[in-house]
Each structure stands twice: as C-alpha cells, then as structure tokens.
Image (cartoon, rainbow, N blue to C red):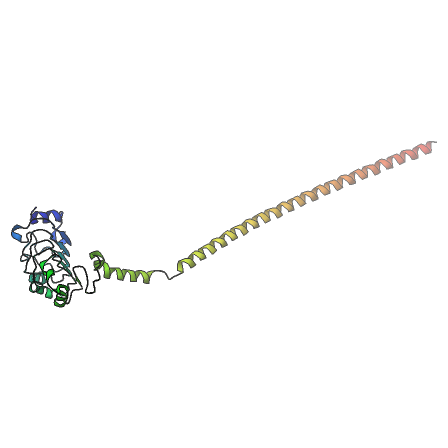
Amino acid sequence: MEMKKRINLELRNRAPEEVTELVLDNCLCVNGEIEGLNDTFKELEFLSMANVELSSLARLPSLNKLRKLELSDNIISGGLEVLAEKCPNLTYLNLSGNKIKDLSTVEALQNLKNLKSLDLFNCEITNLEDYRESIFELLQQITYLDGFDQEDNEAPDSEEEDDEDGDDDEDEEEEEAGPPEGYEEEEEEEDEEEDEDEAGSELGEGEEEVGLSYLMKEEIQDEEDDDDYVEEGEEEEEEEEGLRGEKRKRDAEDDGEEEDD
C-alpha cells in the first residue's frame, strides 16, 4: 500500500489537525520520498515510518509538536539537517538500520536542542572506533544512545519516559490531597465507638422499657391483690355478723322457753 492511501486509512474519517499519533510502518514510499503528509498535521506528536524504503527527508512537513520520530530500517544516508528545521522539539529519534556511516552526517543533529534519545543501532557508524564516546561528545544534549546512557544504564520505556514528569506531579498531588497517616484507622475506631454507643443506648432504652412494663405489671398485681383482700375481709365480717345474729336469736328463744315454764 502506498503512503498516501495508508495515511487516509489511518485518519479514520478524522481531520489531520485532530491526529496526534500516526503509524505508517511497512507501507511504500514512491521514489523514497514522503507523500501525503503536510502542515495540516500540526498536532502530531508521534510519527512512525519504519521500513517504508525512505531515502530522503526533504518533503517532511513542519511538525512543531512532534516529539518522537521512528525512521528505522530505511535507506537514509544524510539530509538530517531538515529535522532541526521541521521538527525542532524532537526528544526521541530512531535511525537504526539506515545507511548512516560517519560522524559528519550525525553532526546536523546538534541543532535539535531538546533531543534526549538517539538510536543508531545497526548503522555502519556504530563500527567506528570510540563510537559511543564520539557521539556523546558530539551531541552533548542527548542522554541515551542506542538505549543506554554513558554509564550503560538502560533507558526507560518510551511510555514511562513520556509520563515521567506527569506521574511525579500526580503522585505529589495525591500525597498532598490524601489523608494523613493513621487518619483512616482513627476514623474506623471512632465509627466503632459510635456503633457501640448506639447499641448501648438502644439496649438501655430497651431495658428501661422492660423495667417500666415490669413495674406497671407489679403495681396492677398489687392493686388486684388489695381488692381481693378487701373482698375477703368484707365476707368474713358479714359471716361474723350473721353468726352473731343467729346466736342472739337462739338466746332469745331460750329465754322465751324459760319464761313459759
């Protein structure tokens, strides 16, 4: 597939100014030149054109926001001065597997002041004596060459490198905004104490209700017992009066019989 068609396919009905990443790997360059890219891709931050038989960067459009450029496995041998003119904010450049042979070709990258990582792996220039020392001396702005710094420390992944500053800021914000140490534990303890107090108060209320109802029942029972006692007393008095009346009656009858005699 030709580069123009591939670009139209990658757009997916989006306008060029809406695109921030564009991958055109393994498509076909006509005459080894870039086709289909223009200045309307002004928001582009990542562009990959690996293995597209690219030999010239002369038709690279102005991409001021471009930070990462992948150009590996092409046939580029020079003309790198275009990069500083068209992509002044590049931080990462991959030229591995191209036809770069000498330091004078790489010297043009000195004008990429923001360049931090450069990859020349599998280029003929890597066969030069003191290759790494020479490149680091020539391009003093770079930190990583072919994935390693001057002390042979490996470069972080590109995604980590992208998010490094942002993540630090986010972590600091989270630490500042987050609760102090032990805050959650104290809060949990307070919640537990509140639950216990509520349970205790509910239990106390329940006990009060039970106590009140019990006292009321006792009072009612006492009143009933008093009523029963009064009734029994009245009955006994009535029985005693009845007995006294019968005794008086019998005495009167006895007196009457004595008078008759």
